[in-house]
Length: 288
Image (tube, rainbow, N blue to C red; front, side, top):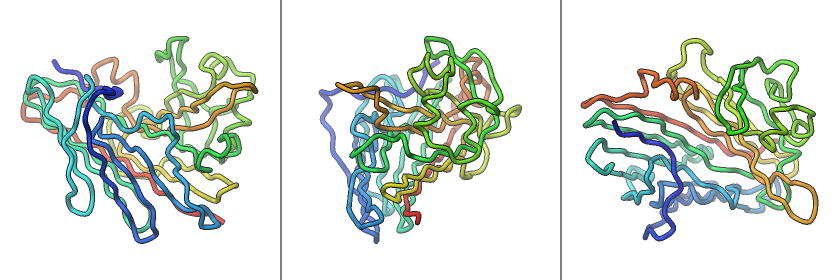
């Protein structure tokens, strides 16, 4: 059985970059190296352009071992294709940017051999363009449950978000939640946890629907996330320097529920002739 999981691409790969531009002068750059989102330039409330993809982002790599995708402009977007070594499966990814600032990322896997699939889109964002941390970003996640992890980041149980720093059912500043005296937060050095945004008990995929949103009051930029997946991983990336720990980027990564992956949930295993599709969309706009 072949396993398809995210991985950082090899630095030695030769690759091309593709740029998409919409009517609002937003630009998105996609790389063949790992099929990654490399930059997303957009205006703030004063019309100043900045790249909201955090410099330390891994992008949207969807396969291991590291691989070079073949890309081309197609249908107003970018289409990328990868043949998995050994001929187990063919993977396709597409990026499309519309004039409303919505970047839609779709994946399609066609299996020739039994294949365990976990596709993930994991760009890291900073809506102020990196001029400051993300502490004042207001985050909202439509989730009643999250997954507790051990020191190695492995899932150990499911807990209700109520009464914890993981309760983002109403908008809350990320920085304030990072300062809560919580064992899960201190153990991970911040957030790196899965939230259930689909039906907690059924799992599986659903229709494309909005599951999270983030607002930066300084720039006025607002990011909305939609997905067909049952869960999302919220991460707050950080860096250390002369001062205290500063969280410089956040990630909202759509994926399958972690215990379903570990238990080889049937829908994640493709048999010869079967296909798997996943869609995630991020919409970037301005809010008063």
